[in-house]
Image (tube, rainbow, N blue to C red; front, side):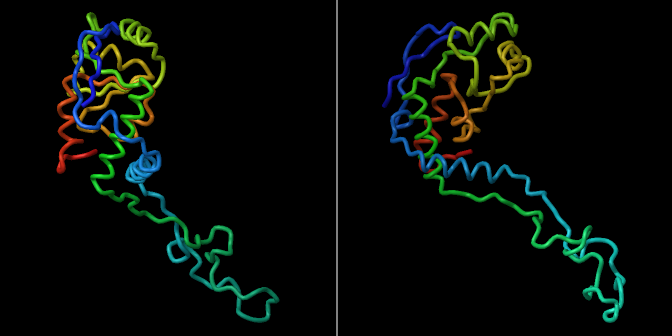
Amino acid sequence: MTKVEVRNMDNEVVGAVDVGGDILNSEVKPALIHEVVVMQLACRRAGTHSTKTKGKVSGGGRKPWKQKGSGRARSGSSRSPLWRGGGIIFGPLPRDYSYTMPKKKVKAALKSVLSSKYADDRVCVIDAFDIKDGKTKEAVAVMKKFGVNRGALFIVDNFDDNDKAFRAFRNLPYVNFLHVAGLNVYDVVNAHKIFILKNCLPQIEKVLLTAGGKTA
């Protein structure tokens, strides 16, 4: 159990909350974090690259010249990989790069990276995600109060385009939003400062502290 301060959008402490288990105080395992990040990046690859082999390149149906007597090396097709405009030998073809890892390892990596960020004072729990007028200048002011000007990640429980706070922050290029159901190692690693909405903590605990919880 870890007691974490809860702050408002003015960076003022308004309370505290207990985060169960070892979500924020587990052992940091860089190798495991790297392994999960590599898996996530592999799963994101489109795999649509494609090249043509000798049999798929158009043309080249006729033998360029007779087999003997020309003084040139024998050749059977102008689409040979040895020729300009010919096929590609062992070129990339469409494939699926995705693979899976044991859920326990993914959860352990997520707890590890959250613990690392928390130890570096880069995790902040906020009581409510709200902005008075929904203006971008208000969002900029909030970021200045937290001393953040890059890599801000807000973990929220819902996305609402009509929400004033969402409209205010979405114009900032260094601010990203992530639904709590999609919490993952890659996005946490890339974030400089992580803001977790207090309402999201129960769902995070449910996923990371139960055997059958779903991981992104």
